[in-house]
Length: 260
Image (cartoon, rainbow, N blue to C red; front, side, top):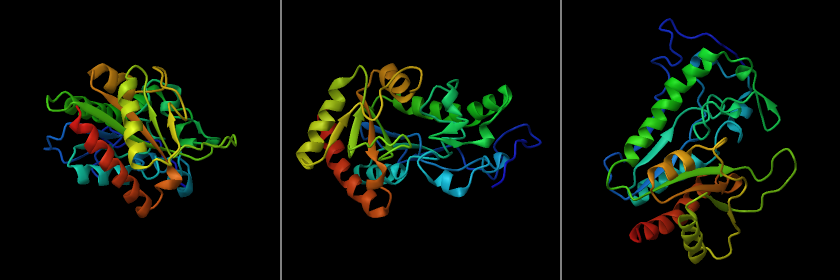
């Protein structure tokens, strides 16, 4: 483990050796559904070391959404859609949270202390927002404003069980607030292709303005049909699982797109 809190001589958090916070796949696609993956990466900026965490913590569900990036990439390739993916660990800054929210840079995540997030200065928080959150948010906003997009979907994954011991039985869930129709249609399409699945609606959590970003700020604000898709991460923790779920979602999203 290593913990650094300094920034480079330029006064920036990210160095030329750090990856760009935004990865865009199939950027010139005209497929009408835009894909977003806020928790695709687990990278920590070099200036922050490893946030004082062991590698297994960054590899776990607190560090990123396990399998979500793989499913998103495969889905984007199979349907020819544009996907916007975020490179950094959700522990550095969570791009599906309002940046001012306390858990946007959590000091503790699912019972695990995050030393590198303890006592972050106001400037340190602003730097993470300015160099990671803002560019990613701007990329999503710019893309979704293009006239050929008629829907926007965000891909996430969730742990089968948190430290509180409560089990989460759903294989997939659709999260929404005002736009109930999109998630309900996606649920129907999943069941047409995989009738034995246990599907959650607004599970394993509820959307609200204080702790969520995609649905209020990209879905509702844009007026586009939208849903946040959560897949249980034990089902997509390896390449075979990711391929299987990408195949299912390919059928679902392709059919959904024809109805827009």
